[in-house]
Length: 269
Image 1 (cartoon, rainbow, N blue to C red):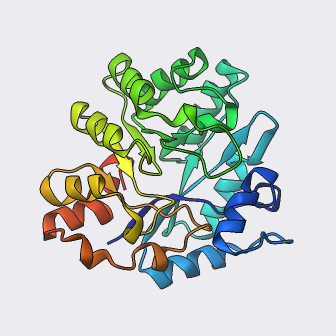
Image 2 (spheres, rainbow, N blue to C red; image 1 turned 120 degrees about the horizontal axis):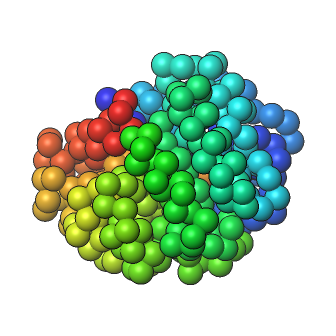
């Protein structure tokens, strides 16, 4: 089984947002002019052997780029293959908490994701803290981005130390998934992951052959590593992301944990 911990089935308004111009340029692709059928995302999963993909809503200061209800509608078209990840508007913390509870209790979503660089606020900002308490209460993980930003936004908010480290100290019960590996602060992210039992890493936005050596060492040498597979689809397709997997030198237990075991435990799949 393979679980993709970070995917998007994007709307046109999300995929054509100016902040993503750099990503389209790097990948040599162009954003779509029309809404993309869910079958395209499922087809990409099939081609890469991915069984379940976690698709995320996106909220920023300008509002919903991919709303929670849109994500729910995508999941409803392929409920055995897709699972929803909520996002919320940080400007209204209590409304954000109520929306998160609705997404989990009524829509069956598996996690919350807030991307700090989109708000230009670190995850230690006071507006995040009611949401962290709600995540613990609901028994869901908080997913975020660590490392530099490919989109045209500042990168400071993605530093594992001090930000993820401090949140994990303040909320030791909170399960935190740091997506996008943490490069160029990968060693910091691995250190935070080792330090805190509820902190995990996902490899979205990187192909296997671009994993930093610090991450590969952690995965190969620690059979209880807390790294999970992710793509950041549609920017990287699962088939391309997994090419070269055998070269990592993972034993059977480490490989299973990476491809599905950690994600199944964290997201309760």
